[in-house]
Amino acid sequence: MEQEFHYAPFRIEAGKIREFALALGLRNPVYFNKEAALDAGYPDIPAPPTYTTVIDFWNERDFYQLFAVWGLDPNDILHGEQSFDYEKDMISGDIISATAVLTGRFDKKDKRFYLIETTYRNQDHEVIRIGRATLIERREQHGAEIAGHPKTSSRAD
Amino acid sequence: MAQKLPDIQKQALAPIDMVRYSGASGDFNEIHTVPKVARSKGFKEPIVHGMFLMGWASDAIDEWFPGRKLSKFTVRFIGMAHAGEAFVIEGMLTTDTAGELQIKDGAGIGKLVGSFELEELPV
Figure (cartoon, each protein chain N blue to C red):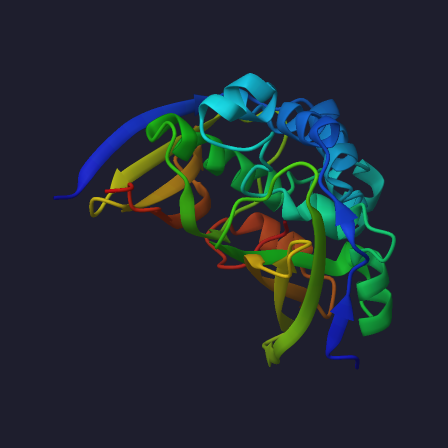
């Protein structure tokens, strides 16, 4: 299994931010209006806190390719946990390069856990965000059991 | 100095909202949009993307702390969420710059729990 996956460089664009913010129902005007962004101290429209999903999935080398390289079926993968460290703003016009590293893999009962750390750097090679995901592969068909027990500690994303 | 933050009510999603988020995010995992696939994976119906809920949580933090930026944000997805259910986002400030939140359905069943830290304000 490849331990590292390099996403293609990805441009942050205001129109895509707007679409993403509308789909989520975000209400902060900085995501829609450049004047509001400037008033808030940004040089241009900023990307929202969970925008790295767009970088991962709308990429020329996307998350599905990562799944394929690592031998995973996306429909069997549940998102257990997600965290972000925010180091610097991500601003429209930035070109983001991201590298995902498999930092852990272990089995618990009938589930396999994958820990993935993704580091996002801007065009100046500054680290701007670090994402840490726990993905859960259901080794057998246990969705019904999970769905019927809301207190189960893992769930689908 | 724990301080309760105002509850934020979220209206029920329609299935098309999950289609829209799939398109916007690029996450086209079919368990979120295609009932047949969701059922084949053991779910009673399509489930809301976890990152949709995390996006809502980020919007709640924006509402509670206008103009403040996040420095850390961590969530755990603890329950399946579906279209047609209304949700409430509850939050608690635990220090000057850190807090916890959760998203629950109308029956009080948790879907997401999380914690966040805000950037210090410039001196």
